[in-house]
Image (cartoon, rainbow, N blue to C red):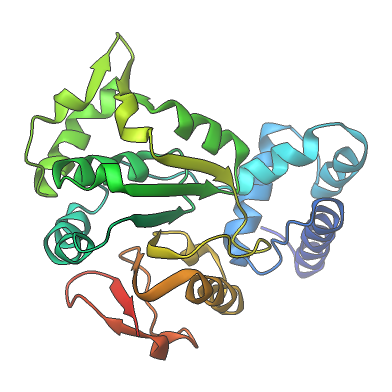
Length: 276
C-alpha cells in the first residue's frame, strides 16, 4: 500500500511522464481514464524491471525507441472476430438493406486493433454482395497493431470461438471457406482485405480525413474521460455523412455525450445510432 505522500509522488510521476510523451510526440494521454493509464504504466515498469516511473521518463528522453514502446503499451488490442455477435446480426438485418441503395459505401473502423473486426465486417459484406462497392478504412494509434491487421492472420486456436460467433452473427456460409491454415495460424483470403485501407490515426489528436456512411468505434471510448469522449464524438460528427451510422461497444452510449441530440437511436437492442 502507498502512503499519502507516496501516492502524491506517484501521481506527479505519472503527470510528468504523460507530459513528456505529449511534448515529444504530440500524443496526449492526459485525458484517458486515469486508472487504466496507471495500470499500463505500471505494467511497462514491471516489464522493464524499472525501480520507479521517473526511470521510465529518463529512458524516454535518452533511449531510442523506448518512448514508442511506452505508447504501444497504452494501446488496448482486446478484440475478436464477430465480437458481440448480436451487434453484427442487427447490423446485417437493419442497416445492410439501407446500404444496398448506395453506389459506393465508405466504412471507418476507428481503433481497429489487430483487425479482427475489420475481417468480420468484410465477411459480412461479402455474404451480402456489397464488398466490391465498399471501401473500409481501418485505423489505430498503434503502428504494431496496424501492421498485424494488414496481414489478415489469426491464431488457429481461436477459430472454434470465432466460428461460434460467426454463426450467432447470422453467417450464411461455412466459416472455414474464408481462410487457410497451417499448424499455428489461419490466413484469411486476400480478397477480404483488397478494399481495406490501413493507416495509423490517433482519435485524440488527428483530424477527419473523409466522409463515411458508417463509423465503428467499439470498446475504445470506455478508456477516455467525458471531455475526451466529446472531442472524439465531434470528430465523428464531422466525419459522418448525412444519415450516416455510428456503432459503439456494448458498454458505451451517447447518453452522456453533448452530441447525443445529433443522433437518433437506430436500434433498441444494440448501440447503433443514425446521424440526424
